[in-house]
Amino acid sequence: MKVTTESLADCIDRIETDRKTIRVCNPDDADVSVLESFFDPHDVDVEIVDAPGRPAPVVDLRADGRRIASSPLDDVRRYARAWEESMTVGLRADRPAVVTELTDNYFESYDKQRMIMASRIVEFRAWNIGSGELHAGFQQLSKLDHQPEVYRNLASSAVDTHVYGEPDREPLPELELTVHEGDGEELRRHWWVAYDGNGDDEEKIVLLAQERGPDRFYGFWTERPAVVDDVIARMEHLA
Image (tube, rainbow, N blue to C red; front, side, top):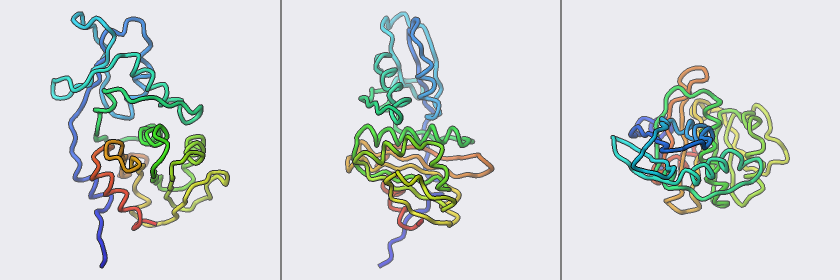
């Protein structure tokens, strides 16, 4: 019996998300630039405010005018630094509540550099857990050249890493990756990184985007387990 799966374009079309905001309260003299770098690929607004009723430096995640989660500023900065440096120096960190509750978002008109940074959201999750399956498609295999340290570290871990793309060049030979070559339109027009959470629904996450113009990507990232499973199930039909 032939089993059909939803196309990657269909997955993008059916995702709807709420716009979220990160509010940094009472940072004093703390450097929050690492937070701005971390939340930029999440496509959320970052506000810095004085909040006299909340004396400690804290970070709030907000949507629809209400607070969804809060975390101490130091905890969020520690996680953001680990995300920023993890794939080159091997840092790991526990997720604070404002990151745990930032479960999905839709974005428009990302360029390649922002796609690379957004991909790190998923890659860092896989690296931080250290096991499970990661599936990454960057249209052409040569795009792995933009982040060799990321995939060198993943290849050295227990994460079963699969990469997909047009075979415009061989991946770096020292990278122990499972390579899937293909040249179909669906593969050439989409960029994705999907992590199966090592079987834990609470750790599953996927980034998926479609290139709708030269270097202009539209898509989403989400932690919804069913969506992650659908994207991973589609992989066997692409290459």
